[in-house]
Image (cartoon, rainbow, N blue to C red; front, side, top):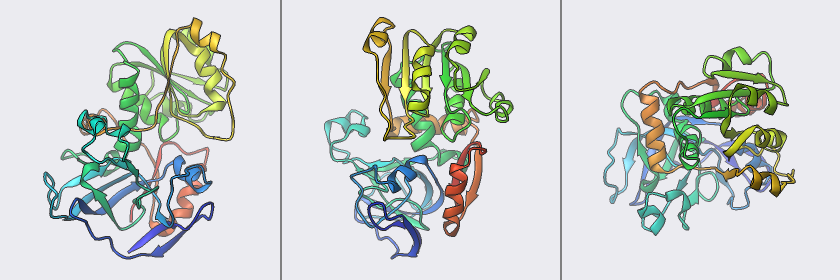
Length: 333
């Protein structure tokens, strides 16, 4: 089959033929219906993910159809539409038994220690699988493990209450535009922040308010007390994100566009304002199921900037880096 393979540390990727995957007893083989490009891919290619084993197939977001299953796989059948968690938990440890698979000591990451999903077919551990509700579009399902489910979990961890105000930075990005929708679906009022005047009208279709500019804290405070910030950017927005929060606020930190940059945190500011900083990156099966339910109900609309084939992966990453795009970039083998 054809796949996008990362050859080695900081050696880029190649589109090449690789053997079709074969399932172990606890695995399934899916036909990849959609995969998604992510900014994390670019960080992986820059060498920021030390657990990567090479060569490895790139891509950690997927929706597909089971075409073959191992002897010990129960609860899933050929023909089932499924998504995969971003990792394979062991399914037996204390965290897995508690439904907190994201904290499993033995977890292995797809596109890191395990082959990912930029391929025609993919091999997935049964412990990673989540069934997709009937009627859910592939474009929405593929977003659940890394985007909508991850945001859903972040807002659960922040104990979001209906009626609270959530501010989202990077509001036109693949994560941001969907974070707005998840927060709205959970009953929040939402302020979207963007640096693009041109994108503001589109963001306004989903957010209650839109702020344009790099300095947004003071304007946000005029709109409402901000209870939760979902920061999808990182160091360029973190200072304003902190300043925008009212006392007792929570910041769910997802973005880290430049891992080489450090941020000097003033502890007194955080202490006196009673602020919680929640570093966040993943989702469990329960979170993915929650996001898929909202998607199936039409409360989350997938916003897709473009779809490319495996041979067009270069074009896909050009689109991913294009500051004029809105939404996610998908891959359809």
